[in-house]
Image 1 (cartoon, rainbow, N blue to C red):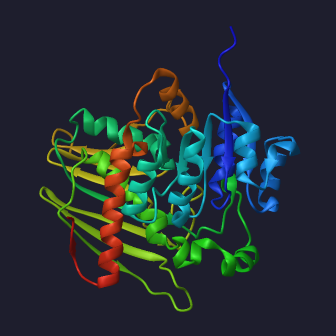
Image 2 (image 1 turned 90 degrees about the vertical axis):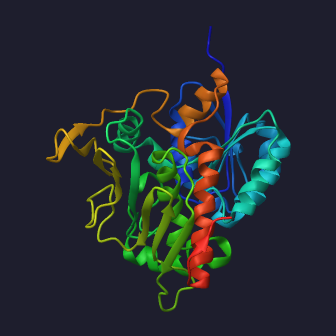
Amino acid sequence: MNPRKWRVAGINFDHFHMGDLLRMARNHPEVELVGISDENPQRMEEAIRKQRLPRDRAYTDYRACMEKAKPDVVILCPSASQHGAWVKKIAPYNVHIMVEKPFAASLKEADSMITAMPKDKTLMINWPLQWVTSHCKTYQLIEAGHIGEVLNVWHFGGNRGPLFHGADKVEKTPAQVAQEKPDSWFYKRAHGGGSLLDYLGYGTTLGTWFQGGRRPIEVTAVVDEPAGLEVDEHSLVVARYAHGLSKFETRWGTFTDPWTTQPQPKCGFTITGTEGTICSDDYEDFVTVQTRKKTKPHRLVAPALKAPFQNPVQYLLHCLKTEQPLSGPVSLATSRLGQEIVDAAIRSARLKRTVQLP
C-alpha cells in the first residue's frame, strides 16, 4: 500500500527560511506540496523554480490557497511581529501549523497563538539549531548524566547579518544587502526586527532544553544602539537561576558566517555541569568534553542524525502519524519558557535595569 500523502502548503515568505522548509517538504516521500502563498508574487519565484511547482499552485491570496489546495499542514514564515496574526488567520482552517522561529514578538502573542489552535491540531515552533548534530549529542550527554547537573549555559549566536544570505544559505553581495536593508522587516522595530529577537530565542530555548526546563529568577540585558538604525545588532543577556548564571549573546556582524567558517568567538553553546563541561559549536560533527575522570578536553563524535530527527518537517509528520507529542525546543512548553526569557530581556534592555520574571 502507498503511504498516506500529507498535503503541505507554505504561506508568507517574509523569512527566507521558507525556501529551506519547502525543500524539506518536497524531499519527504510522504508529502505533496500542494500550494504556496505570498502577497508579493516575486518572492515566490525562487520556490516555484527550485521546487518545480506548477504556477497554478502559487497564490497571492492565502484564503484561495487554503480553500483550493486544502492542506493538512501549513508552514508559516512571517515577520516576527506577525506570527500571532498569521496563526489566527490559518487556525480556523483546522490544520496543523509549523511556525519558523522565533515563537513570537512577545509572550502575550505566543499565548494567543496557543489559544487560537484547534484542540486536536498541533502547533510547532521550528528552531533550526535543534537539528544540528553537535547540539543533539550535547543533550544526549546531559540526559545521560555525563557532566552531572547543569549549572551554566553560555550561548553566542549570530551571523554576518540576516540579509547576507537567502534560502539554502545562498550568499548575497554587499550591494544587494545595501539595496534590501532600508525595506527589510529585519531592520524595523515594529515588525520584530533586531538581533535580540532574531537570535536570543535560540539561546534561551535550547538553554531551557539543556537545563531541564528550569526557569530563571531574573534577567539583565544590554543592547547596542547603532547610529541610523532603529533596532539592535548586538545584545548581551544574563539570566540568574537558583543554580547559577547563564549568558546569551546575539550578534549581527560576525566576521564570517558560522555555517561557512566559524567566526571568533565561535557560534554555539558551552555548558558547565557539576561533573564536567561540553563545548558544542554550531554545525560541527563533534563536541568537546571535559569530565572529572578525563579533565583534558577531548572530542566525542556527534553522529549524523537519523530519521525522523533529521529536520523539522520529517519530525512533525512523524509525531502526527504516531500521535506522539512534540519534544525538545520545538515543543510549546520549552519554546514558551524561551519566549518568557526573551520578553524579560526586551524589558530589561528598554528599562536599562535587571527585571524579575513574574
